[in-house]
Image (cartoon, rainbow, N blue to C red; front, side):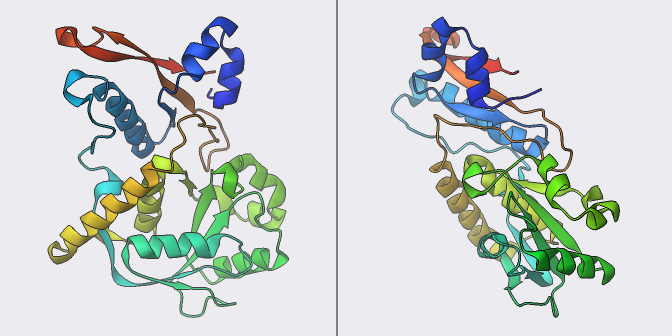
Length: 276
């Protein structure tokens, strides 16, 4: 089972807490989903490389993993309209972010879906506080309008455990199987571009045509760079993986730098994995 950074610190012996948690070493969360694991592995690899002789003068490295979704130039080849209901606080912001990142998506914020091809159901601690949303979701399911669910995991945006939605969602929707479909996790920081890419794929985005590959690659790189600047190295609270209602995250930290950890006698970084 995983745990938040605060909980892991509480389990750490007092004489080690300062060296592990207060020296500014890089921290990253570890999650079950493979696409997010790649981001965490890149974070660890970057921290190690930046301690090696060849990269001591650098502050960041543009690492990538072949096939990672956040580096794929995606676009919507077919007409796709995403409905973000005004009754679903936060849905419009996320929908517009997806549309800005991936070309060809139209966002509707009308009171009714109209010609929309998909509905975005944005889930955070305030979901279903507006009674209209439950009726809209119910009607969308009756009309067989595809619903793409996004589970917010950023505490600053109302992120919460997925299990909370079984308390706040009308039982009629739960009994009708609303949560049998996968809800995509929306993580902050370096993991955020992955969340956007997976949501775009759920909406039907496909690899961009050759003529737009270069521009889309630059755009994806820009989004990834901007997100990396949002990472707070001193906080990495973990949230339950979306959709399964269980734990399983761990915090991995680069907790010491000692000469000779890497071959050739150069400076290196020793890695430890902390899990509840």
